[in-house]
Amino acid sequence: MGYAQLVIGPAGSGKSTYCSSLHQHCETVGRTIHIVNLDPAAENFDYPVAMDIRELISLDDVMEELGLGPNGGLIYCMEHLEENLDDWLSEELDNYLDDDYLVFDCPGQIELFSHVPVLKNFVEHLKRKNFNVCVVYLLDSQFITDVTKFISGCMASLSAMVQLELPHVNILSKMDLVRNKRDLEKLVVLHYAYISYLFLFWIMAHTFPRHFCFMYWQLIILFFPVLYFLRYLNPEPTTLLAELNRRMAPQFEKLNKSLIELVDQYSMVSFLPLDLRKESSIQYILSQIDNCIQYGEDADVKIKDFDPDDD
Ligand SMILES: Nc1nc2c(ncn2[C@@H]2O[C@H](COP(=O)(O)OP(=O)(O)OP(=O)(O)O)[C@@H](O)[C@H]2O)c(=O)[nH]1
Ligand SMILES: [Mg+2]
Image (cartoon, rainbow, N blue to C red; front, side):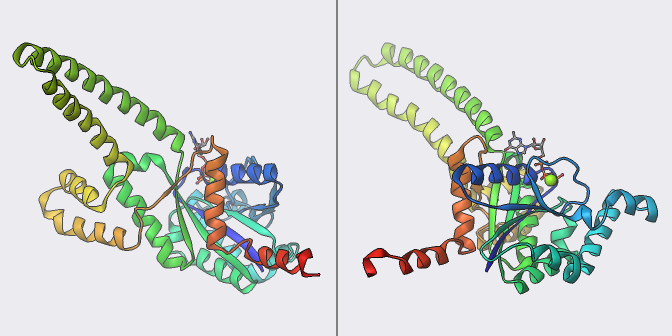
């Protein structure tokens, strides 16, 4: 039994960077994984490439010989891969043993996981080769700066989920950028809270000179910033719906409600945050994916077989 991650997501969402960080992390902890490049347009790699689609077909050749543009050329390359699943891919996969762990770094063209059946047939082939496969869908954290962007990212992920019919892990990448923004927001809110506090303190001191009144106001003033942070830490579907309705014209209310229900039904609101600066964040994501593909479960059984107490 082999194990595989299919890393997909919109262009520039951080797929290749994730693959490279994952490889580094695994090297550090003494675990072997092999990264496969499935992007015929990729040129620079921060990880050792175990298998490379460019050995099968080159995007530049396709564009030159067939007169196609970069996107049409890429779809042609992927369809060529589909035609060579039994030859090229099977031969390459034969180099890997049982228990090997492959990570496929895919191109970012959304067509590949919305309606073009190449990836679907690709994973079917992996399954036939006895691989446990999990989809890892990366969404750039910038998508949470705007509710409409967030919903469109969720829809693209949902489309991959429905098309590929595999265990699916959603990841919010580039969390280091969110943190900076949130720190700024925190600072602004605390700044205003502090000014309000001083202002009210001054008014109350002149109007009600009793001490318990200050305590009462103190509680109210501190309560508002806390509520503000909770709203960002744990977004509820109802909050998303309210924001969506606020952003769009009234005639879209019914559509918004259905979209949010759909997103909620497929548990799409749950994304695992990935902060590449933290080793613990990569480790947590990897453990969740391992769980999905049951990696390591056989190893436990083997350890039990060799338990020295049995003698
Ligand atoms: N700040 C920050 N930048 C990141 C992170 N991950 C990726 N990037 C940057 O985002 C850009 C795109 O990253 P890639 O890893 O090439 O994204 P990709 O999804 O492989 O892109 P395509 O293969 O073209 O679809 C690069 O400039 C990366 O340096 C991250 O965790 N934090
Ligand atoms: Mg890439």
